Image (tube, one colour):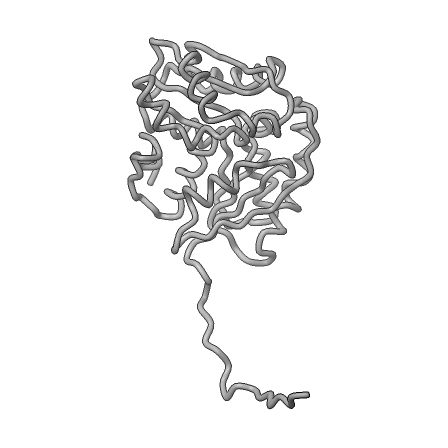
Length: 258
């Protein structure tokens, strides 16, 4: 048997302050198939790290089940690089952000990560639509009518005019993640009213961000999706102003207030 000569280095290694300059934390549903993939593609780079945690969630997608996630938000945020600051924390559920409320989501996350800027898909979508100059919108959701109605109320309360609101009637977010990109494009065309300024596609499970530019080419209008809006917000909040037109018109816009 070989005898190993183990020795301690003559000095301790020098340590960087951070492995990466900026940190984005994701709080995602236990059932989520899409958010991590989209953020690794659109946000993670040599300067920005993306770190995820999952919180309990039980289908079907109903207002009651969505609201039930609120007590897990603080503990979920605390699990992302414990005792270390994050630059941005994004809660990846559009319909739950409506049901729980953007302000309540922010408060729950800041209880664990007080210095982080909190992003929700709903607030990011509103910022994105405003950055694109959209006031009259079409909306496409994968949800049932029951779950979609609060979202319609959310946009109306913020002063948007809804030209057309289309629901696909699904109640399981795992099925929403399995809608093919081709089907997303087809439904997006049907959901877009001729007189609207932009189309919003809701749900972080839906793989719409990957075909946003394709939809824009087909309908001739800007497209905002849940994951496209949050990725854009996280990039801009981390100081990344790079225009990425291949991802859609939103990725060429500045973030409001920056």
